Image (cartoon, rainbow, N blue to C red; front, side, top):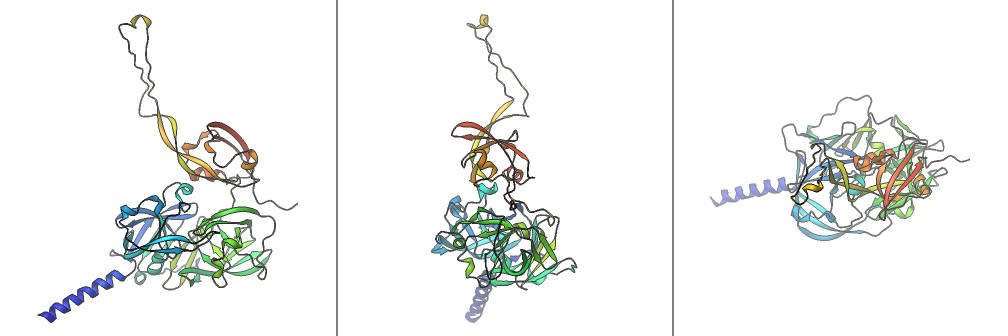
Length: 450
């Protein structure tokens, strides 16, 4: 009897251990789960449940550890258990970032479930994507999902499909291109080609769905990856290591086997910002969201391949922000707007002492005060149209071309700064309590040499 009890206990412990240690598994009969996402600024934002709490995460092939931005004060809600302090290093000019490693968390994406997930909490307030994107983003997840599942990313229809690898079946696709993946530090790389100054150069690129740019290249004289005019200096983004600066330009083409993307945008980050990235042998740059979104992609880490099929975004022209303005949410402001649910009513009140004076109090309830997001200028490129017009960092945008800014989402306003060269932009802004008006014309920051 004791022996039988011992065997039962060992069986239970073995099953529990095996189940607890597995990775992501889709828990339904189809062994496949479709999850809709938001595509914002070329980034994939997916709903993720952590310990039963639904959050929004950036799906990032370029990150090897799940990260939560703890400045949003969600640790207590998630019941995270802190175990040790570590330091994470990434792109940027600063030092490593302090993080708290939390163990034994449960993560769910659609019907895909993982137990005993390690999560890293970061307290750096600069790693807050919410103001720039227009809604909360609580963290980043990548490698753990891609390692365990076949991930289809349908950029055109804005969904991902997660499938257990043993269940996934590839369909014949004559219009697809398949690339072999190489892995360094749990991150995927592919081999491609770029045409620079009419010279075809083979390059190894990190696939980074967590970057909103098109293409980053690391300057290398020996390979011919050298930037020349026209280009402009710009803030490229913010990584774990701090700010990333560099130069922006265009190249003749990016070549992904039979797919050729002409006049692609390209950024050349400063060496000081990419010292960690250059540690990867033979890496020449990054393939990011503004390229990836032009394809529907199947990522299969277990087979070591990625499949590209061009979609409706493929022919979308590459463009830069022609205003020089970068906006972000900056609190709220009171907006007077019409209440469509109510009719105009007038109320008269008279007292015995005022009957002969015909005094009346008129209350117009057609309007109400509503809190709306405030959009502030947080980056302003020097010598840009907006800069030369006199706009300044910190200005709150009240209206654009005569329409109240509160009627737009953040992304809708930013989209107007990418429109055709020559378009007139009229902005009304608040600066230190004063209302100011500015006019400027959109101009491409890439100008040909004269």
